[in-house]
Image (cartoon, rainbow over all chains, first blue to last red; front, side, top):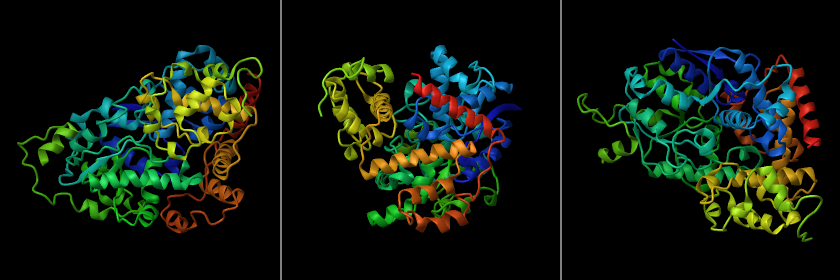
Length: 314
Length: 189
């Protein structure tokens, strides 16, 4: 049994509750125990670093200091935005002890920052610490026939010198996880384009434009669904999809899954535990593709690499 | 309004370089950032022009531009910059300097973007976490656009996409203290 410190982020109690609950199902199967940070606070998201310098580092630092009190060496973060704020803070603090000392004055009562806990996104944790082979071994209901466009957004792999994970331009980790589940990852060029992120409320026009392009490209790649690992990407692409369709005069009808939902599905969890009714765009149409095509015979092993697999299918 | 050279102790270029940790002088104006930027079409001055304006010391013009308010910090530009300049950090430095010196673009969009961030921070200060429903309601009230996104509300609320309440932190005092100290640090730079 592995142990992991867990930072769910504010959205885990609302917007992305399905991410949080399916992640817990998946990690149960993978034999990982989560330990919550006691009384964690908001990371400050975009707003803190847009408006102020110090608060943007102080808010994540409190969580880092609290995480260091637990015994685990790694903190797994569900939300991509929380992950980035925490990682940025950690990198700055580790590189610049003087700055760390200064920011530490805001959270003196919680303790002194030591820099002993590593910060990872849950995608990174699944890919690096659990690994494709183990994920593959837990699959009981392969997602054969389901074509997915894996969308990473800006925060999981960029900036490269901060995240140090996968490629900032054409990442493949999520594609490989989806392939391990039996699904087919399409060749999708908008993997790391921005969805409009925090403009969701304050500048909806920009979000509709940018997310609209991502939906169009996913459709063109032949995907039945988009897979994400970020609550804000999910809500922009899912909740705003009907408006985007109306604006562009196109029907996309592409459901937006968290990668943990697909993992739980492939691991054999019943559909009613996967919180599909929370989606704005209905998922049934896309899921009907599973097993629809001739299943791949067991002896012919699919190559894990996303791009190769796609070209072989053709 | 053009201010060349220094205003106060440092030149504008020095201020921006110091704050961002980047060296804007390294920019050779290839424009790759503009082609990459997902929001450059909404900016008064796209990233390449902001870089040149910083070099020229056009302090007021940079402050009053909407560019640094539209920057999403997606870091696509810096990943492709052949000079490896941290352009989002430059944008952030310009924005923070502009906020410090109270030079704010007063277009409707920038006002709304700013209001959103202020309300978001206010939620954290009050509850330690984000209270989405209240944040959206306050945004609509304070931008006098009561019916914005109202057509999404029934579905989102019914499906539990947006929870009705928030569970405040036990150590709410710690957060208030943090805000107070951070504010002091902000003033004594």
